[in-house]
Length: 252
Image (cartoon, rainbow, N blue to C red; front, side, top):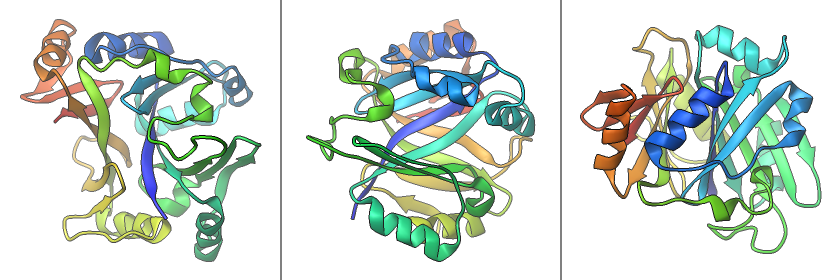
């Protein structure tokens, strides 16, 4: 069985400013907006980064789950770590064995969705999905949440992929081991889990904000162009780090 990092979701109070900054700084563009997400009181933008997706969601109604998450975390920030598996059935059996509750559990002829309850995982939302149909397991293959033609919006001049997600936790060891149990993957001594195409990193909360998806690592083709654009928007936060949508983005 394999498990890939396929999508990272941010949540923002307002969609357009965060979407614009991400596109301007990373040199990427929106590939799809999911009309169905209005069911959850949200709007979104899905932005290809290599063969993965960076999503920004924002509430358009009161009393949404996304809005409550914004309140808990004190503003814009990381929201979900979304993975792709090659076989849903044993993953689902493992979730049931561990007693992990599901927030969403949807299936159609193209896609199987399994979003885990953060109170049962710790750290952040963790999602394990399976794409179905022709080319489903290809690295550049279809991804139903991103629409039918997301690949046409890829821009790789500056960034080429998302290679790590950093989950900040009150108790990193406990959360790392819980995610390791769920993913059925080993946890290293420095509290990382290796997926097939990326790393999950578990760290203490040191920025004054509660548990959540605090950062990502992005592989760069032109880091200097990213940093130059970040400086123009005053969102550079380190020698090789920028800060967009309440998330630390390390350039590697």
